[in-house]
Length: 175
Image (tube, rainbow, N blue to C red):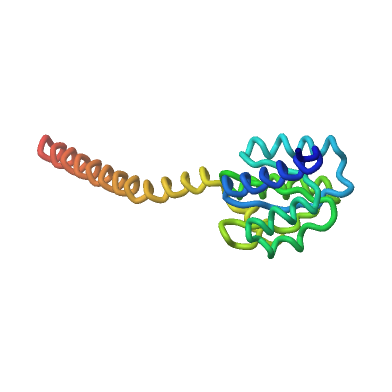
């Protein structure tokens, strides 16, 4: 029979592996010096963006990363750190993290991974400045709609001018 500590370690390692496989990527943060209530509020905010903050012992995180073949991320796991697995848009998650970091300077965005591409702090900051997927869709719809709207306006003006001309001819003939 296995010891409880070993079971907890194996469960945590398996949870990291499953979370990584079911997500689009991860971001590693260092939270040393950030108060527990603040971390709880960050966790709740991330849930709204379909992202999960997972805090685990560094040795377990390193073993899970090695098992996933993510050796290049192992060096990021040193001091107390957390892993944020995002299921949807990395833009929303990065916006939340950058906004939280402005309020809590002790939080450090270490880097991460997005669909087999390593993310640096600069990449995360750039993503936080991008518009959301819904905003991009709206911009595309407006861009596609603009030529059609202009065509309708031009055709409408042409018809108005034609009717105005006919009205002028009618008035001349009646005089």
